[in-house]
Length: 402
Image 1: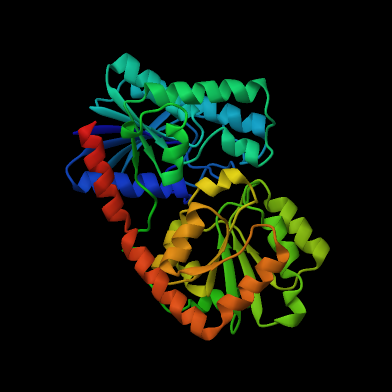
Image 2: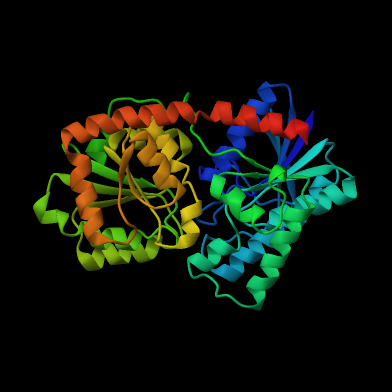
């Protein structure tokens, strides 16, 4: 079996889309599948091409048995809506032309930005192949939720395109049960939609002692560390977190909040921290994938937060699975399906998004030693049930039926 996978994020980028695509494809290659990935020069989230790469018209490499084709795109930082749209469209166009010359039996195109899915749909048409649309985010709904665009004719057009893609795809893979319900509610046959959630690589994310070098480097020795690792974007509500942690400076001087990553709001967050004169917040730029585990080791609690919006009731941030694999309890500022998972496994403490009082109570609760010990048991069970290998194998079975 030969699979052509279109994704504008791929290692050495370390965001959730890149990790999911890479780990699934790696498993499929080990299962005897020939996998080709079309992506762009790695540049997320700063919009700067990684060392060792160039933004060339066409270049290839092999990563763990996966043939990777990198095409030219209009590269921009993860900020500015119009520029990002140009980035998305340029990748879709270039991926389409590159895909015309790749031998394949099945095409997969992954969202959230569905211009990639448009490329997959047209490749399937011209190549006379079936195609699968992987939906990792409900786009354009999510861009309305963060205020990047208001409801209008442009959004109506995007929603029309979105539904046409759902209708045209031979199969749809989604990452949450709620996504399936929402897409089915738009008139798409439920049997056409399969749920394959995110998970963690349990071979990479393994519990280990705290990295002493990093503790010393960031002056976190002896601190109870609550850490956020991921994109600092419009959706993540980290401005609320900075306001909420200010009171802990005096009441809990042994507590530190670590923020690792980059994104559209990183500059504004640094300015906010300076304005608040925060002494208990530490900011670190994005780190290579091999270092993420070391940073996960030094946290005591994984902080997962999103803005308060009905749209985010449907999402499941992949960072909860990686933290769980490292046996780090979750402090969750998110409701909906993710909250259900955390509560079911007793893997963390949840608070209402953008509610400072609820956040404060949750922080105090998760620190209680008996609670903390019990939550560590819960995250361990959660991680075992969301082993990325199992999810990749199940998804491959779905693809073979298509």
